[in-house]
Amino acid sequence: MDLFLQIWGGSFYLSNKILLAIAEGRTEKNKRRLKLLGWWIYILGVPAWVLVLAAKQNWIAASIEAGGVPSMLLGLYSVYHQSKTTPERLGLFAKSVTYAAITLGVGYSIYINGGINSATQLLEIGVMVGFLLGSYLLALNHLSGWLFFVLMNGSMATLMFIQDKPILSIQQLCSLCFVVYGFIAAARTRH
Image (cartoon, rainbow, N blue to C red; front, top):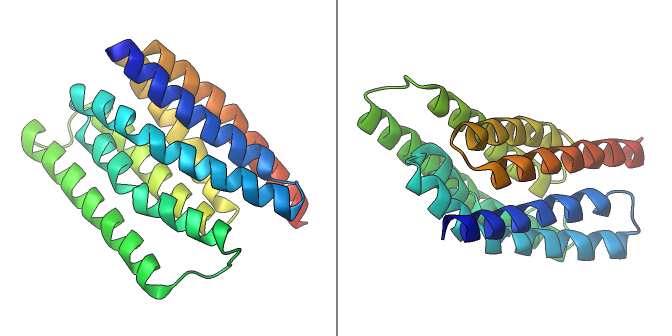
């Protein structure tokens, strides 16, 4: 089952990064299609990631994966409606869920571990910051979202490596390459 979850979560996540990265620099119509597909694919991979992370008691990272779904939906909304701005209520909902996920994940991790006292918790915090800010900023079409994804992918690759999840560690490193590509392509099209 663990292998199945690694392949499911890893392939969906990598597909998301590939689609978002190659969308940069495309015509608006193609860019929109690729981004819509990318956001949907990521959402479909979230259950596998949550199960893998919860099984290893990575509560911060698991709560962030689940809590990031509203940001993904915000990204879907923005791309679908070709909007630079989002409805106030949708933005407020995404922020509220994000803050709740941070509070619950970090709080529970601190509670069961007696504080922040392990390398895995520090890596999870890197994942949390990179994922939530990266997803939110990319949903709003901000270039800096890609840079937060670099932090996220690097932290998650390391976490998965030290927890004997080689498929997910390799997938994260591959995703990192597409994140760097996406950042470069996005930066070129904006200048």
